[in-house]
Every structure is written in structure tokens, then in C-alpha cells.
Length: 196
Image (cartoon, rainbow, N blue to C red; front, side, top):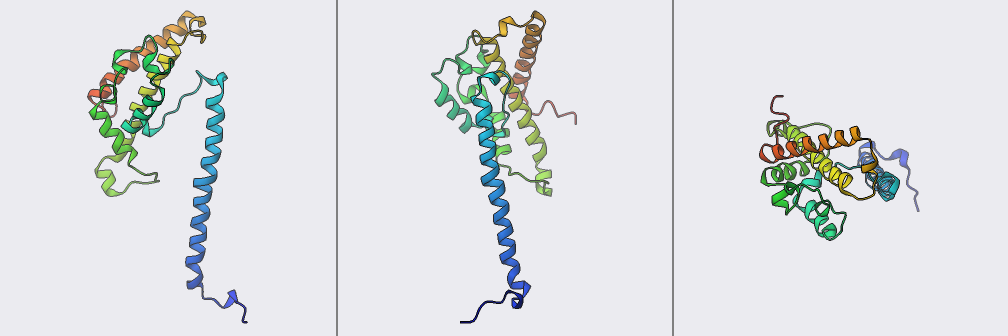
């Protein structure tokens, strides 16, 4: 039986094999290992009671109907679900359509359908994809801040009432600003970047 001599194989025949091996290694590192590490780090952070009011995520999918409904179905009957906490503003209580609204739904669905990339194509530039991603990030951060502030201000025995009066006043001021911004996001999602 004759043995295979790699030195005699033309590079054009080896090139696809090498490229496939490199692609599979990149996928393995990027998809499997990094996601596992990220999941472990997030798990430790979110399981820690010491970080309960010191952490907040801002994921692009959080304003989608699917994400909202899954969280609502899972947490709706929990006393610490933000909509159940005393002091939650009525604008944040209700169904997806009532809380998020059609305009933000369109922005969120468009933004989440965009894949991770390092550049935009000409078509994506014409469709204003970058601004859609920015708007979705801004609105998601505003919504998450509101949820966070509802939990911070309304959860009993969490230390909020022990804060100095000026810190509570600053938090309450931020609450008011975020509520006003949220109302504006629901009416005109791009209000923060229209002047750019």
C-alpha cells in the first residue's frame, strides 16, 4: 500500500482543507468557548446578591415582543417583577403593545435582525441601519433604567431608604428624566439622534 505524501499534493487541493479547518476553529472559539465563558461570568454576576442593585444588562433583543413576553410569562406572578412593585408608573404596566408600542417594536425587530459585523454595506447605509441600532440601544437602556429604578425604589429593605437624602433626590430626578424620555421614545423613537 502506498502512503500519502503531503509534499506532492498541489497547494490548490490543500487550500480548501486549510480554509475549512481555520473556519471551524474560529467557530469553535467564538461560538462554543466564548459563549460558555460569558455564560459562566454572567451566571456568577447575576446569582450574587451582593450585586443585586449594582448590575444591569442592555441586550439588543430586550424590546422585542418575544423577549418581553417570555420574561413576562416567567416572572408575572413574582412579587419582585417590576410591574408588580408599588411605585411602578402606569406607562410601564401592561402588555407588550401597551408598554413598548408599535414604533419601538419596529425599531427593535429591525435592529435584532441585523447580524454582527464590522461594517455596513451600501444598502444598509441607505436603510439607515446604524441609526436604527443606536435608537434601539438608547431605548433599551432607557427601559432597563426604568425597570432598575422601579426595583431600586420599590423593593423593601434594600437600603434605598437608608441612602442620604441628596442621593435619593438624584435617583428620583433620574427616574423622572427616564420616564419623560420613555414617553418620547414611544412617540418618536429617533428623537435623540434627529439633530445629527
